Amino acid sequence: MSAPDIVSEFAAVVNAQVGREHDFDGSTNASLAQLFSQLAKQQRDEGVFSAGSISDIRDEETYWKTESGTWELLERLCQQRLQARSDALDKDAGMLDESGGGSAEQGAVGSCSIARAAATDFSNVQELMSNTPLLTEYVEVRRWLEETARPFQPVETRKGYLFYTRRSIAERGLLPSSVQKGSSIAERIVTEADPDAASRQRRELVLEDAEYEAGLIRTLYEYVRRGRVANAMDLCIESDEPWRAATLKGGLFWRDPTLEVGNGVLVEDESGERMQDVRPLHTAGNINRTLWKQACAALAHDENNDLYERALYAALSGRLDEVVLVCECWEDYLWAY
Image 1: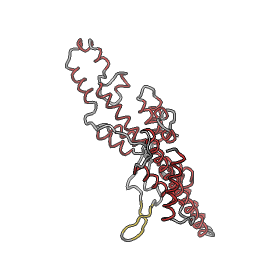
Image 2: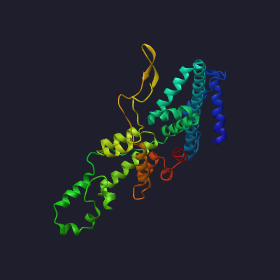
Image 3: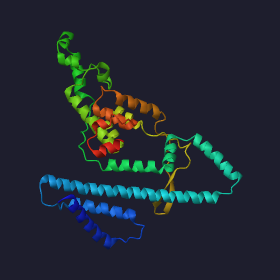
């Protein structure tokens, strides 16, 4: 089935469904986009493809997946713009209610300036997002790219950091120095097992450990590519490499509940709707986040590091050059940019 035939078929399905379930009153654009996404996903999941070769069937399946994902993105952006418009109207109404306040208004401006001076990184980012609708849409597109990324097989967790390398070091400690010097393999292996030993000594890990580390780093990158940094940190801890988790956690914005103005979200429970304070109980995040980003950028720039390790820390620090080295499809490039 050619692309025009697929489009015609989908149009017929959409017309039939919309005619039964929706009216065009001008207020359902977002829900219609969601409906189109669901219909395209249904076409793909049902697997009702035209007769043809395996490659033709795969092409048609890819088409339906792309069609569904595109409508999902449009629905998200439509919701974003509707919410931004609603927030702007509420803000304008609030300003009108407060107009004519005189000295009270001046006092409010003064207190606002003090609050900004003591703002945390987290509150600064929140303010930037609320005042920049386009940036909010960029973030939504990035989330969409992360959630729709192709599945991958993560590396298994393994207890015992550098198990084979540490065993090799221990065994060499029992051998005479003359035997150790005569082994070319032993001379290439690190003599210490700390995380920086390989780069500091310009030596290698035992093969089994080197292969696992490569798989672990690739998995960490793939998790970050999918917006699953928490999963990446959990994997590091479960694999007895908590220091790697710490390098990932450094990207959290610094927060201090004593400096943040009441930060609430609307929640609904048995008693009805109410505002719930979402400020942390204690300080959180990284107050030296700028320094952390510089360290990540240095790791990404170091050509002696693994390719995916460079891409991982480049993505975290906002460097593009190293991320594109591992991009495999259009969505990967768009996410990187």
